[in-house]
Length: 323
Image (tube, rainbow, N blue to C red):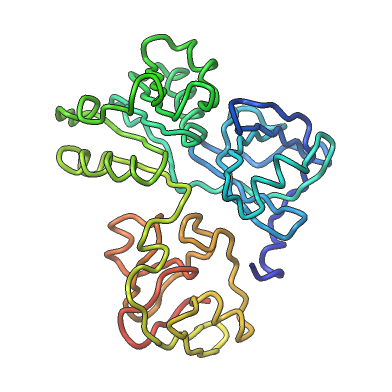
């Protein structure tokens, strides 16, 4: 799935010190450093790569407290169509077992900027939102959270969130219907920052409403790739030059830049392989990228100076990359 050499850089050995059931099919894992040292710092919105003994690599949001340097906490939904990641964590991993993880990365940074904060979460999308809520409360920010899920039993950390009173609205779909996004986002509030994480349908609906009155103030995190990241557009063959090594490769229509370079002896560090995590983000020296990821912002895309190699392609015939 990934190139072994660069993936070994920056890995951390951790031990599972506690496992808890947070909701139906949602289990939390407390990960402590195996050598007892302090873990790298992180900020709300960050995630880690979890390297499983099976060879799989999966990304999970950190949902604990950034001030706690002796442990990371992740919460994992066991999906019915699991490709092996959530199934292994739920069915095989136990207290005392060891794992290797990557250092925290953040594609969903949280900045209050003195504005009103509106958090919207759907299902397991609550995990990156939790640390944001805690920080907003700790810093005395004005905030509110709307949290939807299929049922009360499926909504992780709902009991913990009850401590915040009416600033949190818990909306189980089976008893209260879906989140009313027209009510939540129906009126313009230009002093608001919106942070959203959840299923693709909800993200799209929130994005459409925010684009009408909050350009630049909408932030989202997704756990599955959008159609563009999955390669919905047509693809063509093109050439890629790895400037540092001088290697030039042909990228076929049915392969990624990352795979073509790795096969030619230029290892590319990858993880999600869906344009979600940013591990393979690389500087573009020449050529026009065809962006198909879900992490670069509009300004980054427009600049054409960086791209994500696991899913994005070339709009012309040739790219020159700083790799």
